[in-house]
Amino acid sequence: MNLSIEYSVSIQHIVQRYKPLRVNETMAHLLIKFGGGLITNKDKMMSANREAINNLAKTTSILLAQNHHVTIVHGAGSFGHLKAKKMRLALGADGSILNQQIAAVSEVRNDMELLNSIICQSLAENGSKTKSHPPSIWANGTGPDFEGDLTRFSKIDPNSINITFGDVVDCNEPKKFGILSGDDLMVRIAKEIEGISHVVFLLGDTEGVMTAPPNDPKAELIDTWKIGDVLQGLHQGEMDVTGGIFLKVNSAELIAQSVNDVWLIDGRKPERVIDLIENGVTIGTRVTA
Ligand code: IP8
Image (cartoon, rainbow, N blue to C red; front, side, top):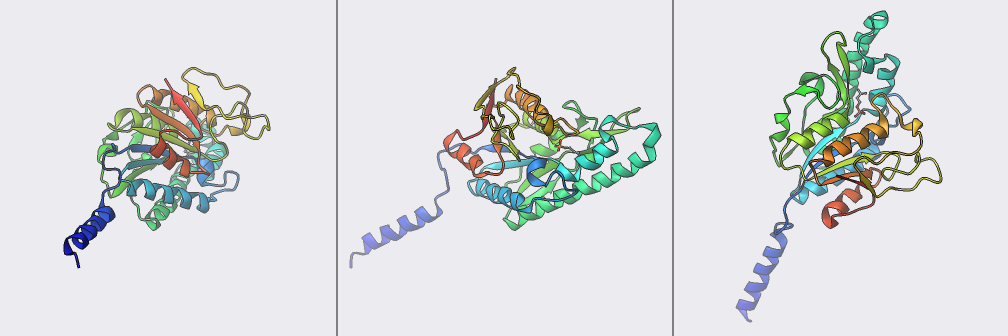
C-alpha cells in the first residue's frame, strides 16, 4: 500500500472539510430591516407571521455561517401601528385623551417587546443569539435626528446579533412621546456604525419600489432608484403611522449617500439577500447616489 498517497488524500479531505468559507473575500456587515408588514399580519391586532419570521431567521443563520456580520432592525406592523394610530401617539401628547394615551404608550412598548422576543426566539431556534436594544430605554425624539447613544451597535460580537426596533420613545415637552420608526434607526445606524457594507429593507408585499402601488396590475419593479427620483401615484394604501414606502425610500436615499449597497428587497423571498451577497446583485430596487 502507498502510505504517502493515502496520507495526502486524508489531509486534503480534512483541509476541504474545515477550510474557512470565502477565504479571500471581505466579509460583509449587513444592516437588515425586517419590515413590519412582513413579520406581522398587518390588519390583525398583534398577529405575528411566524412562517416569514422563521424564513428570515434561517437566512440570517446562513449569513452568519458564511462569517458575515448582521445587525437587525425590525418594524412594528400590527404590534404597533394599530394602537398607535387609534391613540394618535405619533402626534405626541393630546390633553383631551392624555390618560388613554399614557396607558397606550406602555401597552405598545410591551407589545413591541413581545414581537421582539418572538423574533429573537426564532433566531435562537435557528442557532443565532441576539442582544436586544429597545429604543424606549435609550432613545429620545423621533425622525432621523433622534438622540441616543448609538455606540451600542458598534460592539460587534460574532456570536450575537444586535437587534432593535421601531418603538414609542420619550420626546421633549410639549410632545412627551412619539413614534421612532425602525427606518429612522436604519439611517442612523447605517451612517454612524463603521463597516456596514450592505443595507437591506425587506418588504412584505412587494418586490421593491414599484412604478405603481403593488396591487395595481400595471405595477413594475424599478430596479435602480437614483436619489431624487419621484414616486409616481398615490401609494395611499401603504401609509401607516410612520409613513410607509415613502419613509423607506427617503431613508434609503439618506443611507445611499454613505453606503454603496442599499436595497429594497422582497422579504417573502429572503434568499435574495444571500444572492446579493454572493453575486453582488439580485431582484429588488437598488438605491444609488
Ligand atoms: O414599523 C413603528 O416602527 P416602524 C413603531 O419601523 C411603532 O415604522 C410602535 C408603531
